[in-house]
Length: 334
Ligand code: UDP
Ligand code: MG
Image (cartoon, rainbow, N blue to C red; front, side, top):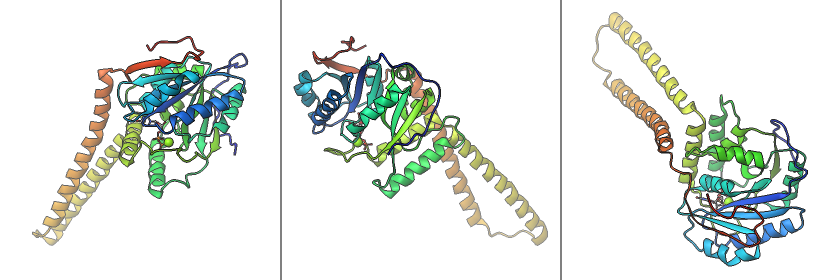
C-alpha cells in the first residue's frame, strides 16, 4: 500500500510536539458528522497525542449544526459555523486559521478518509516530513468521464508549470505547523488549495490508499461545481489557457495569410470566379467563435483580478463554540 512519491525541502524536530488538530469541513453532513467525530475519537484514544477536532460548518442547510451541538460536549470538538456556504476551499482555510496545534490533519466529514491511516501519517511526520498526503491508488471506482476530465485537467495544469501538482493527491493530509502558517499567509480569494500545498513546498510524502465509500448522503460536488473548481484552479495557477488562445490566434492568422496567397495565385492563373461564399461564411463564423472564446478566457482572468482586488475576507464566522474538553488556548474567532 505504501508508496513514497515526493520529497522536497528540509525537516524539523517534532520530538516534543504532541498536539494534533483535525480540521473537517462539513456541508450537509447530518448523517455523517456524529460517526466521524466518534471514529476520530476512537482512533486517537489508541494514539499518544492530545487532539482536538475543528469542524467548519460551511453553510449547511440540513441538521449538521444541531447534530454537532448535541454531541460537542462529550468530545474535544470546536465548531466554527460560517455565515453561508463559501465552498470547501474556503472552509479549509477557515479551519486552518483556527487550528492551534503542532500539526493539522485535514479530513472530509463523510468517512471516506480511513482512520487506519492516521498512525502512518503521524509516524511519517515524526520522521521529519512536513506534509503527509493520501493519494488515490487508482481511479477505477470513478466514471470514465470523470477520469477523462481529471486527466485533461492535470495535463493542462502541469504542462510547462514550474510547480507540479500531483494528480491523485487529495486534501486528506497532515500538515506541520509551519506549513499551516505558510498556507494561512496566502490570502487569495480564488483558492485552489491543492495547488497551494504544492506552492508552499516543504518536505512531502504521499501514501497510496483507496477512499472508502461515502458513509451516508451524497457528494456536494456535481459536474458543474467540479468544472468550476477545475477552471478556477487552472486560471489561478496557470496561464496556459491564455497561451493556447494566443497560439490559436497565431496559427489561424498564418493559415489566413497562406490562403490569401493561394487565392491570389489562383486568380492570377485561372482568372476571377465567383464561388467561395461557403468558404467565406465558414471562415468568418470560425474566426468569430475563436475571438469570443479568447475574450471569454481573458474575461475569466480579469474576473479573478476583480475578485482579488475587492480584498473581501475568505469567509465570515457566524458562531464559534468549543467543548470544555478542547485543549488549545484559542477560544474565540479572529
Ligand atoms: N464540503 C464543504 N463545502 C462545500 C462542499 C463540500 O465543506 O461547499 C465538504 C464536505 O462536507 C466534505 C468535503 O468537503 O466534508 C468533501 O466533499 P464531498 O464529500 O461532497 O466531495 P467528494 O468526496 O465527492 O469529492
Ligand atoms: Mg466525499
